[in-house]
Image 1 (cartoon, rainbow, N blue to C red):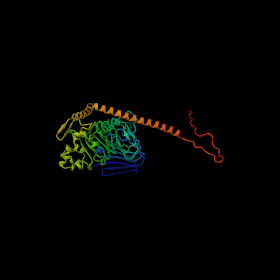
Image 2: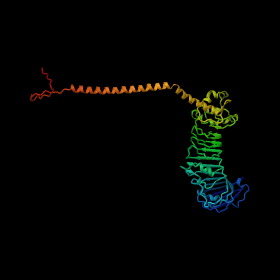
Image 3: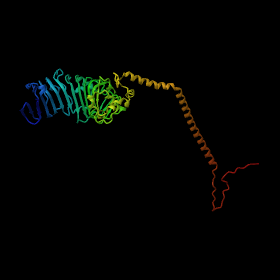
Length: 441
């Protein structure tokens, strides 16, 4: 039975009932050093839960958690400025939960020579207001923490990114990392490069996985991509390994052979090195990517596959190679498993596909050089034709211009000037309007 020590902000009251303690304190109170030193409880690390709730003016005294040994310690809506000295001489905390929207990291120790030997197994920080999480927010090295949860559900602009090098130094034994942030939509390239000891990576709220997003994660046992995945780069899963890849909660993810066949090729090596990829159950189109991934699947895992595959007839399953042409599709992939590929009993070394790709490129080049004389002749004919067309257009434009000038001169010579008579005075103009041409004989 758990012993629950609950600290609230109403009034002073102490109750004892059936091995459950409830302590209620006023809103402002102080912790003196060693408040838990006289608390004796057998197996307290498995039974004692301590919660500090709704106390924004709480003061954290140095060494107040001396001799503390508990299963869970939780801070909810309390003073966000938590000094690391508050945990000085604490013994064991299985799970430390900090749920303060304005928490900005632990305050560093006032004494640089202070040693911290207390043990924490799990650390959860919720509603992080820090934009870029760095090592300075964790002033000591937490050698015992193997699970870290970083979440931000409500703070706009908070927890946009983190420095994975710094976190790897502060949590050298980290094996489980859970991330959710309303501000992080993409897993960028090499985002977890220095957290190379991770075994479980759980992501949520992510829509896009970019190239080499999980670089250097070769010890993963489970990679969970959460509910919101929409786009996956063709090179998202290179330079990594995992036993289980979970996409089963991303109902809006559309699996496409043209985009994703080569993306998931590396997860299907030899039959004795299986990597199980679980997609959403509601996939209606049983693509060749699914057929390729599940072609060696044990019957015990058939119920975990999408309905379109688990409900397929035996005849359809035996015709997968004829329908999908796996060998031809694999020739289009740049990245293939190093161990080789087995397709319906026939094993292909990875070098086979690379050699085929190289020979295909050489064939294209040899085809060009074999008929290069024809290409040269065609190019020469095209150049001559282009020259003649331009020359003809130039001549036509010159002819039109000369014709226009000649027409203009002809019109000017044929122009006549009308003679105007004044009928009132009846006087004729003695000078003719047009000069007459005289010829002497």
